[in-house]
Length: 231
Image 1 (cartoon, helix red, strand yellow):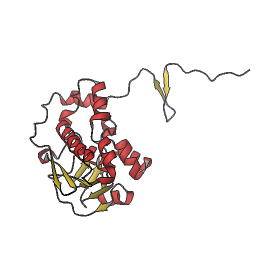
Image 2: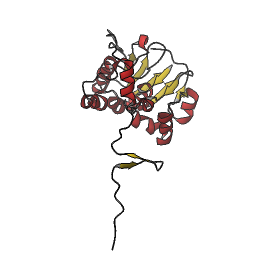
Image 3: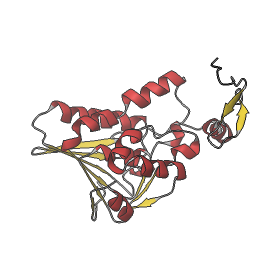
């Protein structure tokens, strides 16, 4: 007579073999951080968060909030999406060059906007449908990203969709989201493993350690290392 395995009630088995009560929630790191931080004013509005100009068959797109190290806020996201849609709709644009003004290409999500979505469903929709990752994926063969400075979170997740990523020798890459109780939400769970594989992506995400440009080149996260001028 075949017997079924004992049914475990009220516990969840962990990878290390330990158990915890099933109703014990995982620590909400981002929630605790938001509570400790308290209310903050939203980032100031920018007249031109992204610059786009046509040069022949090239479209030059520049993230343009240098005073905030081009943090990936709502304004930057929406303006970048608009610029990328132009490239997608115009067959006369053979090449898109993506760069950033100021000391960094992009320092990741704007912390002052964290926790401002009205509900979880809206936050999920914005992350999965409203960002620039899907457009960069479609435009990928035509895109060259030129990055410099601190490229954090979205600052490497988005460029990784490009056919070519050129990094300044002083560039440093980081994926800090997991340490905050989040996942790389700008497309990095797709774009980065395609370049460096799952295990190296996991290493970057779980450790949050900085990756300098020479190591990024050796791993294949970037394609060339050479001086990159901001903008």
